[in-house]
Image 1 (cartoon, rainbow, N blue to C red):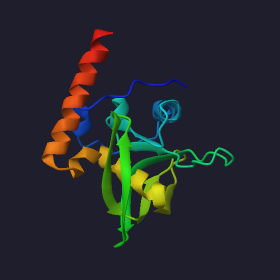
Image 2: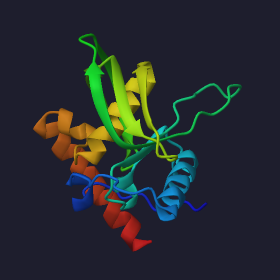
Image 3: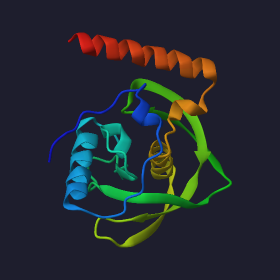
Length: 173
């Protein structure tokens, strides 16, 4: 397993819709393993393919926060929301591709998601709380959407300028 560099906004790859997974290859399994290691190392609770330059519909997540509880790493390929609650939840979201920037985003409080697992089986699960927020955030990445796209144009522009400055500073190092 290897940590991969995380793309920082603005990057055109973060705004593109990803291609579906058509075949589960050893390369894709390695990528999933690398993505989990990268997410844990960051640290974060979710990471989508395009954030590491992988333009395919794959995401990883683990929203277990309790240090006493066992981790629950998940790999979802071709995930799709099959049901969303009418009840909404507002959560202060951040993103590994937009470091140190946070904003409140309102999404359905609960969702059912269907996906393809690494073993080729189809799975479906009901998510609530942080898990629901995280899976929706990561699916947005697969569709070329960032959490800042839910903000006002002014807030989005301010965050984008900060990220451009951060990228310039990192390039000088």
